[in-house]
Length: 426
Ligand code: LRH
Ligand code: MN
Ligand code: MN
Image (tube, rainbow, N blue to C red; front, side):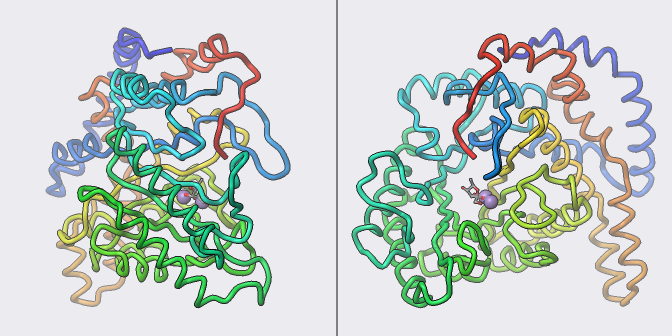
């Protein structure tokens, strides 16, 4: 199923007046403050976030999974779904694949489908946290950190294979996330595990094409509950430095212990030019993978404040790879992703509204109250009509979620694909 452009025009005709009223009000207020609203709208238009191929179906927990119906059962169908999201937002122009969950069988055909949906291939994700059917080696006791050299080599080889597939698709980066660690004290020699990991990562890095980047993702725990070899940003940063200039740290919002100051991590990494990628989601307890912005929207905004600052002041840091990494247990996955895109753009736009010059001056005066006022004033601005202005410019619907429902997308997908479907992924 594809979104009919005429439906979008009808939708926009219906909502245009109310949008215009709201936008005039908000943009008038912001212009009074000296903000160039056109520039902000353009920045919103330029922002693209990759959709993870593993989040297009209903996810589950270890206690069960509830099917959603109309879920994509092949990579081809997943690309169609990303195409739907992109037509409804014009902000989701790429997909991030997880291998081997989404191995393209016919690369040429897959590229064609992606092209016809205006989708490009963002970071490739390797998977050395699960044993595949008939696998010659097992990752039960680690992959890149394993004490057994043959298992390490096997895992390195998988990553090289993922790079090869990515090259054919036109991707330019590899994300490595390792579950490697220990479930019990005494199980693992930390130093040897780290040394093995570093050595294996270098082995992967050596085969990285010149115009590629490698992202090293960290996570404090799960599936291992005592220790994880790449547990935090410091370890990832150290390994990225050891590999070389094409290696970067990737921050997944859910991969921190409660109350960690993620915005400060972002600032530190950008200061050193080593923040490469981002996985958006939200959490209350652990790596909950719930909709970004649904639990801690203010923290998300503060993170974006540092990202915006870094994008303007750290030319040594590369352009960031933005990706969603969430799982949907009870919601329609596409609706959840639409909510995610909206939340990301809201936080980004609010951060763009912070008057950096005024904030700097207040900081230098040590006017703590004013500093807080400046930051919160941006956060408390309702920027949704700015997002709508950006969508209107690119012929996307003013209200994507509303459009998705009124166009009966899910109903159509169920008709096409059936009501008892299972997608590969989480
Ligand atoms: C690990 C993770 C990592 C994986 C994805 C499926 O928790 O965040 O990015 O590749 O989930
Ligand atoms: Mn992740
Ligand atoms: Mn995760």
